[in-house]
Image (cartoon, rainbow over all chains, first blue to last red; front, side, top):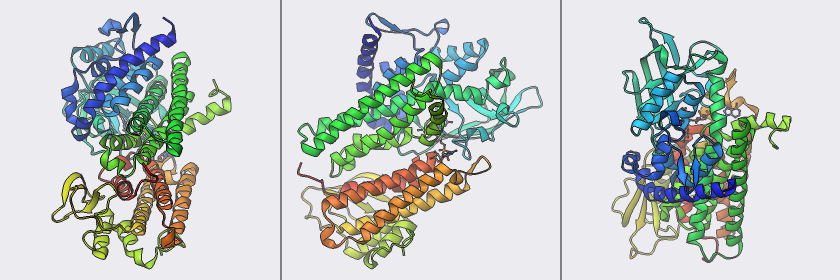
Length: 382
Length: 208
Ligand SMILES: Cc1cc2nc3c(=O)[nH]c(=O)nc-3n(C[C@H](O)[C@H](O)[C@H](O)COP(=O)(O)OP(=O)(O)OC[C@H]3O[C@@H](n4cnc5c(N)ncnc54)[C@H](O)[C@@H]3O)c2cc1C
């Protein structure tokens, strides 16, 4: 089977899963804790161990004759787009390695990997990736959370994090903290959230409510030195550098989530206005073309990440897809006026969700600033 | 004079504009009801109403609650056989939303002006300055346009355009607010109710 046919088969499978996500969406929007009722959905189960290496019990996804190992960005964006077309909230609410897994993959030593993945495959395990702080979002390197040597040979983690997805339900957290000044003075630790000193409270967000963003307080939390990720690596290769690598890898996925939201809004408008004529029909068609165009970019960006690890195209894709999600959902509300948001709860939810992807893994401005060096170097044209 | 330099809300709408800007949607909607009577908000184009709480006896089903600072405000689906709604006051709605935009602008500038980034604040990044100025220029244009609108000129198409641009201007401020603007209990929640007002009270552009 050629690559396109493989991806088409994967997309079909993920679309079935996404349809199940859509049915769960309203409940999760009202009550993020409802995620516990959806752990047996195949899409949620897929996410809950996604990317786990075979040696730790990970199993490839089989679709017909094709096997997908869960290591490629391209296959991941295909799945994420379709799941988000069902519900981006549930996609983000699912247990599993998600962002933290990419960091673990990059930095963890064998013992850390074994512990992490054993828990991931053992039972549904939520993880979170705590980087943003109340005072520092885009400029994450200015973080104030500290990791200091304690009295008993252990380390002590203290500080605050904010807007962290799944923070209040996570059993495992990777937390970024400062050990010293400058870019090399940043490190990440693997935290068991059951430890005294970890407290997370959900935040009341407008959209993507399934993701249950949280505010985290780290109150002199004791950390064993063995839990410092990348402790066997040089300071250059852990901390902020690793963070940038993780974002390069994940960014096409966020673009895919935005694309899924746009696609869902578009499909809904098409369904609600099958007989649209004139300017309305033209507008609906144009939105469809724009979604296709952005999908091409997202897929290319993912292929680039797979091939080289370069994140320039991914920045372009993320910025474009998030702008598209906002535009398509707003246009959808205009096309289904009057009272589109009041009468169509699904569209209302999509319009709220679309606003949130903008901030994940770097705002549009930050993506544009990432893209610019690629533009100058001629890299972004591929 | 509105905060958008050089452009005044017309005298009849100045109070609504100021209430929206300084106190938020619930206060502005209360001021509207005080001015036009208790049924002034009943005329949602598809039978909905957005009402400040406490709303008294509601002629319909409450669909959603919006907490402060956007509210307390409720979205109501009026019962189908309720008395025919009074015609809404379209320019009033426009000025309320423009007042909410002005409040959102202030909230964003205050936040970014205090938020450290590098050696300065986020607001002082050239890119951010340009985006803030662009959003503000859009707001000035909208305010000027609204102020110049004669009653006969307030056609559905023109109102839809104005409201759509208000929404897009607000979205620009919301992007600048960062994740803080994604919380229901902050300026993002206010913008949400502003969008809802346009959604509920604007008729469709064309025959459907
Ligand atoms: C749905 C969602 C999920 C999230 N998940 C996580 C998570 O799991 N873990 C985590 O740690 N964080 C998470 N975040 C937080 C996210 O990473 C931050 O919101 C993001 O980094 C932006 O930071 P901020 O919100 O503080 O905005 P700010 O940094 O305050 O930025 C405000 C505005 O200023 C602009 N700006 C800032 N600096 C510059 C600059 N140098 N040049 C130009 N413009 C600039 C920004 O583009 C933005 O428009 C999540 C947020 C959301 C909404």
